[in-house]
Amino acid sequence: MEIKETFVSFDLALKLQKKGFNAPCLVHYRTEPRPYDMHKVQLHQVYSLRDDPKYILPAPTYQLALNFLRVGYDIDICIRPGIEIDNDGFLRKKGYIGFVFDSMCKQYMIVEQEKYDKCLEICIDNALDLIPDKK
Image (cartoon, rainbow, N blue to C red; front, side):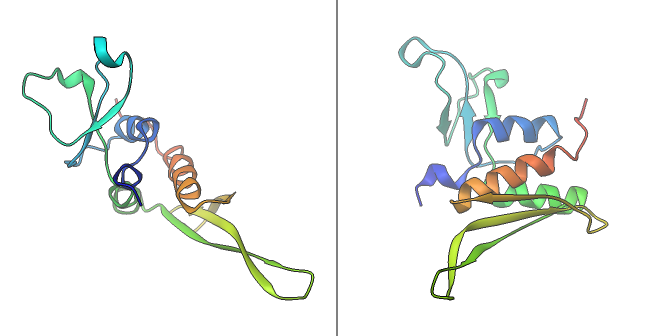
């Protein structure tokens, strides 16, 4: 796994911030447009005090995002392998299935994806839709 795969995407980080996520993060997205990398969103480990805070967005790990949902809102995400029966009657793993549950164990959505990381990202995104934006 590459280091950038440890952290949520820029879009998910932005959505987390709108929902009230404010835990300290080791890495952040720098969104400031610069002449040499026009409008690129980049991950950075450190930023200078001279950087304008409006161009700095915390980039949490997936685990921090899951903790935010579970501890703050009692929303759980469960991901398991998908299973299918092949022509010979054997069980085979097929992608991943993600479930999002609220505090009453009401299942809100099921997500099916070929890749684990994509399934997790979509589940977190869907779970954040259950939370009102912070003002």
